[in-house]
Image (cartoon, rainbow, N blue to C red; front, side, top):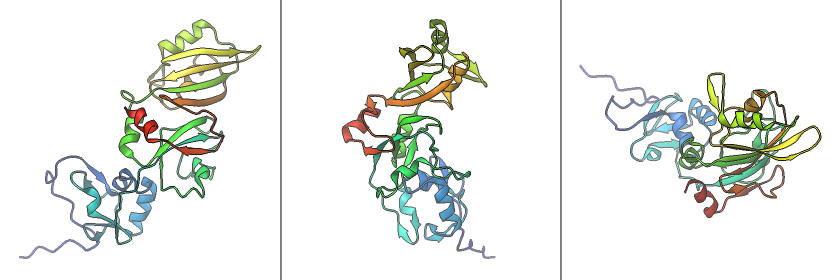
Length: 260
């Protein structure tokens, strides 16, 4: 009896244990290769634009072993993948933009700042929430991005935060030592007062890792509200005089220093 060959549109997944190393879905694989975002890759796959080993695959979760030359197995629109030139960019994110490729609510995203730039698709390296502003990194180098965001190895992130009161030394110490919030341990590596007015103050907050809305949650634990939150540095890379909404490429020395 002859075994029926697999359909032309669905290559056979590799046998269990046939390839060493992890396997990722097809859409995630395209994203990790720096070709496009994961959501865009899923659309390309569903539209039948992506081939694996010469056959069209329409399942974004189709498993792709990560061993060997993964890109050589894939084609988009019939064309072999060409490894894109790596780009490392810093943006001065304005307040009010969402750090996302697309927003389901139709809000403006950070990608508005790159319109007409001629840059390839770049992923945000970390995030700033809609109400926050300042230094935001982008790259199509997934390994570099992972090193930047790694809690153990990544560079510190420095923020200047305007708050609606005059924090006491005891409040600052409590945030430095850390709090429990929603099952997470949150703390600031360093938190100091930059300057004070009659009713509010500017703080400098340094984080080793950035959890979701970490600074706002730390301050809320002390009944302190945030008026402005600006990321001013990642490691030794400072925002400087870069205009709001403007971007610039990092020099090789700069992007290497962040993971050096």
